[in-house]
Length: 376
Ligand SMILES: Cc1ncc(COP(=O)(O)O)c(C=O)c1O
Image 1 (tube, rainbow, N blue to C red):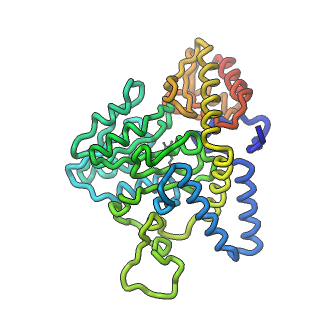
Image 2 (cartoon, rainbow, N blue to C red):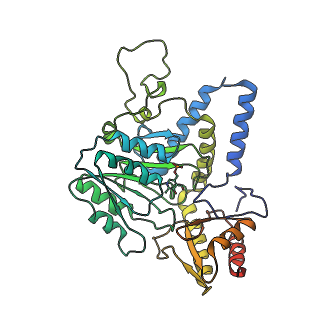
Image 3 (cartoon, rainbow, N blue to C red):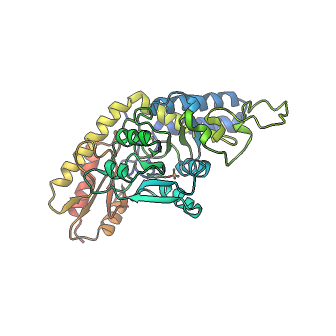
């Protein structure tokens, strides 16, 4: 495969579910941005704005949004989820449904509403046969919103979003997806799954920088979000500084959620990363990524001392495989892997490996050998 990445020879990077390394094109885009800025400052600001629009086009394409009018670029997933939680006008009788095992970003924003009397229903989805149905069953006529990760961060359970989204639409419940563990790894269709909101920072499977995030808000629900932060960039004619409106003229698209100056360097970086991923093709990426996950599962399964904690049925996992080794201290094993340049994570009481599409099988095998040889 073409060397899209150039990690140090000794590094085995199995941590794309945390913070991914950058491809070479992204490194080059950031160097070019810095070099230009040091030489001529913002003289070419109009070109930076073009890159911003290009990134919105790519994000639109990535999630099959109807229009870039539904896309804003924010700081991170937490900011997007907060805009939703703080923007919706809840009634005291409303409830919100989330999986119990969510990453804190998709939990704390809803927990913060409990002071207003909003009930938060946390539904266990791990290790059960029909996680979607469990979430659907937790809804009633007062469920204002259901929010879930497309792929659970700790053990990698992949949810059938179409099923959940359809039930939400029928119940007139808003559907919010934290897609950070699938965008850039597997295909995603905001229209097919009836998502009202999709949020994801770019630093995991999209292989971009931290601090540059997708915020998708379906056109028809944009007015439901009261604005909680304000600035020049969210105005209709943001760059027309000549006239003074007596009333606020807020942009009538998702730009209204971008209050001030954009993170132009992050945008240049994520635009380069996504450009590469879209050139390779998400279907091709998904195939290679699942091939790697399958290889990992096969290797782990062949060792009777290893228990895989992730679901292993086809369609139930994406890039995350979490496991435990019997008879050893798994925290020490995790540390041992780190010490041997295997970058991974300890999550969900196990060791989490998350190889991407470009990860070579021999590197996965190297990590597995270290796991097998560990005996303390
Ligand atoms: C499911 C999920 N959501 C969100 C985040 C990160 O949120 P933020 O972009 O606000 O840092 C992570 C990071 O591990 C995650 O796994």
